[in-house]
Length: 123
Figure (tube, rainbow, N blue to C red):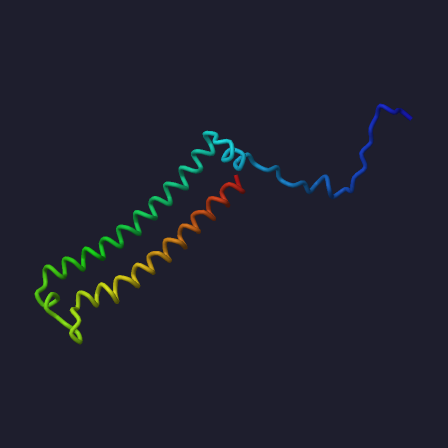
């Protein structure tokens, strides 16, 4: 028997079913390579777009209320149980809207982060 020859005995299924090799995306992020910076920049852009969309929705709604207040004499002078309608619109209408926008922002930000994690694991 020749001692220089090495024989490896394995189960037949282990050679056909190998794990896919891990990619370098997490390493690229850790080491701040150009590829990692591009991936992070894409995540930052998507989160910035989301923040701008949420902010614009809030400012548009608030601006519409202000225009309605300035443009309508009825809206300015109307009262419900001695409470001005503008205060009811701001207190009852806008604050729940802010809560919904905050909830939506968190949900979408988490979704973007999950998409980023899936992208890194798949690359």
